[in-house]
Image (cartoon, rainbow, N blue to C red; front, side):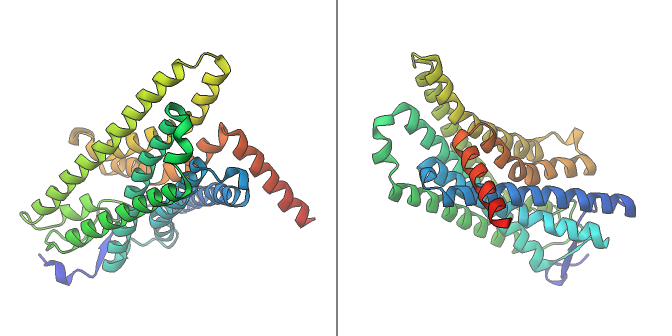
Length: 311
């Protein structure tokens, strides 16, 4: 039984034990990663380049894409590296960095999704005040608050988790380093402080969740009062992508951390954690650009101009 100071690396869970499957996983991860880079990259470029898209909704969407790129880049490249070279180890500092960055991007993203719900609420329920409540300065402050909160939260949790003495070996039952998995390696009584912090963060997350739900109840009531069919449809279509992204984010995260132990198995845990850490960043750009006419037009123009420059 070793104490924490002597652990220099952790062993991650391998996705597969045969070489063929490992290589298959590598190509699969590479495909997903490139799709996420391309999708989020296109959205960022489109919003940055087209001044018609310089509105609060698209400004927050640009931030969301940046956070998605960050969170998927924290977990997938290491998983690809491990699958390709058939190794499982990650250095102590690498593990701490993974925990820090993943927490930072995920918590900032949840804060941002909450702000985006507020943006839709003001747009639909208080359209006349939209310019004053969501001016460019207010939007920058809100986005900065989301990033700042995420960062503080991540630093606090990571410092707390990695200050615990570890005496249950160094094998992390996961394809990336995550706090619940590190806590399982800590000595019996030392993790209570971190559990306290987790409870606080669950309450905060629940607060954000309630805020999002209440915003959408108000939005729904306002939309149903719109007399024209076309007006209702337009209002719904600006909200649907956000609802879909929030639902995907919360449902996969909840299932990963709150599912009953009776259905827990390493392989299922692996699939679920993969779903919540990798699928949202890869799928969000598709969800947002599918229903969004303005974004589609801009992307089409971008791709056409890129192709014409090429020829």
